[in-house]
Image (cartoon, rainbow, N blue to C red; front, side, top):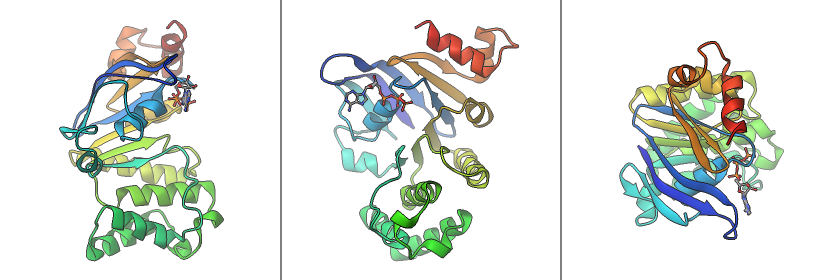
Length: 241
Ligand SMILES: Nc1ncnc2c1ncn2[C@@H]1O[C@H](COP(=O)(O)OP(=O)(O)OP(=O)(O)O)[C@@H](O)[C@H]1O
């Protein structure tokens, strides 16, 4: 479970990138976090993951306060940032072992998980190559694998499908659904409205740092006209704020 309570953040004390955000992502739920460019999605995800400190508010992951007990809170989730261009001089397997070390995954568990994840994402043949030789999509997949090695109950993914080919995108979407069906929590940002429509139990829409909608797609349709496309509803919501 992820809870954000009255969370705000401004850069340089000027414009509020996130303005008094309240949001709960419950166990068993996939929530898509939508918003136009600069709306505050990445800032929110960085606060949830403890990379940025909120100016005010409380964030809890599985009831653990990310400010008060950051290490324990960080063990609860796997985070995939929007850019996968990191640790480029490491080989795929070195990177995965590095992540497994950080999260104290036993040799037995990491062997089993690296085996099953590399098979699922079809990366076995490049595990001994440096990440700098990987394509964007391959880098994304290895970062995702690293984030999942400690088997976290909460997945936090910033634009996880960007750059993935249709097959990898399908595999990840299936994994997200399976994870939520097992009673876990998935919180991801996306620009792709169709993905939100197909995958999410509920969506949260942010615009200029403020939450402008939170609910099911049915509720969103009821709020607008039943026949309007998600794209149209989204544009309406983010235009008038
Ligand atoms: N490091 C920073 N310094 C100053 N302003 C920042 C910084 N990072 C983000 N901002 C500003 O904060 C606001 C929210 O940005 P954020 O990156 O959270 O939006 P986003 O919804 O993730 O956008 P996108 O969809 O384009 O990635 C924007 O106005 C942005 O210009």
